[in-house]
Image: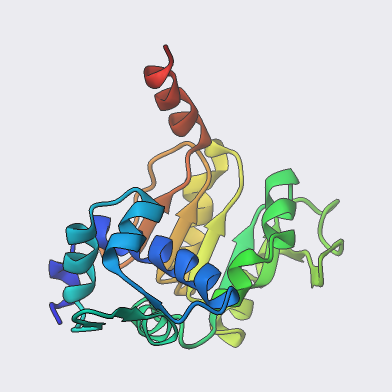
Length: 207
């Protein structure tokens, strides 16, 4: 297996796509799948799928393909989802509430364990099973709950300050929903979920 820094981001981003489809096959009690079938269903080149998986090991069997249960376990290990990954969210507005109530990712051992907001009017409210905490409790809670990933769901004017607080508290990775580029240390990974960029780019494909 290649070292993580030599595996491209594109490969890593495709792994959850493979996992999602494999879980669908598992729910239908389908036990094996070929790269050709994966490629057809996911609209990807089968050779690319084989190459992606080969970075991490030899998981397929010639003439049979991939054993679904085995490949699910291996991809979860690669994505470090063979253990629970605790997540904290800052921003208890409409987006933050929707993210807290969205449970699909929990089957992959990702769990939002704390939610924070700077507004005194929102602290103390309950979202799903979580009580909105004040920002003053961020650092202590992240340490106690061993939070490794932070989600930013605040307006862009507040996002950098929130990112700084996450970094100071020891968070290792951030998912940012605010439409702004964050400045963080090289040791902290940031991914962006920018609805505006995605929506505007769709316009290019309109007839």
